[in-house]
Every structure is written in C-alpha cells, then in structure tokens.
Image 1 (cartoon, rainbow, N blue to C red):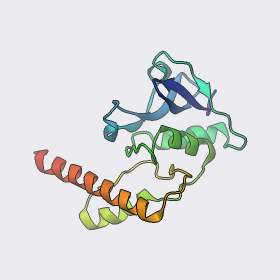
Image 2: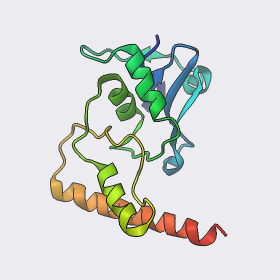
Image 3: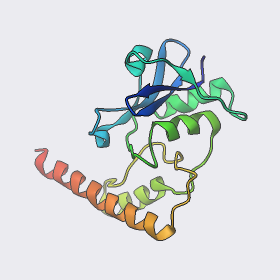
Length: 162
C-alpha cells in the first residue's frame, strides 16, 4: 500500500523500499559489490522485487502515508550508500518513522566542502544513521578512513575526467 515500508528477500539479505502505491517504489539501488555507485531512485515494483515476494514492515508508530511518500520523493537522486549507516533499510525506516540518526555525515560533508570546494564524504539521507551504539573513537576513525577513500575517488575523478 502507498507509503508502506516494504522488503523482499534477496539471497542472504532483505532489500527495503517505500511503496509509492502506483506500482513503483523508492529505494537505494545499484550493482552488487559496487554499492559506492548506489543512489536513491524510483523504479518499477518488478525491478525491485526481481521475482521475490513483497512484504510490508510493521510499525506501531509511523508517519502518515502521504508524508512517507513525500519524504521518499525528496531523496530521489541522492547517493551515499553505506552498508551499515546509510542503506536501504535505514532510508526506508527514516521515511516511514522519521527516526533521526545520531551521527551527522551531512554536517561533516558541508564542512569538508567549504574547505575543499567539493563534498568528499557521503551524501544522501544522512538522517538514516543506525540506532546501534559504536564507540566514538571507532566511529571517528572509520569516518576518517571512509572520508580519505571518498576524497581519493573524488580527486581521481576530477583529475582524469578531462
């Protein structure tokens, strides 16, 4: 139904999306093992399901279906997939419930952009961070490593784009 957080089983994991109620859904999508190229897009339900069975994720407290759909639509085209912190589940859960994330990649991204002139960190629905607690030091180290990797990719792309 329109505004539902839906999921489908794929091999060894569930893939999540928001049902738009018109035969389409919005989800993080990209080629397996190339998730750094993933972005949020609206696709036909058959593309999302890939032969699987759609199941709705139940919530006790969630947003109005129109608000869920509008939230999902506002992120179409954004990138920034991360296996743990910015994935299809976190995106769909955020759209459905508005649960905020404790870590704010977008704030770090804005600071980096103001210094370098481009955004080396992940972009996208940064409010989809996990509820899981991670030690602050580990999280900062991890973010620093990911930032360096993304900065390297961005610089390489800018240099060799011509």
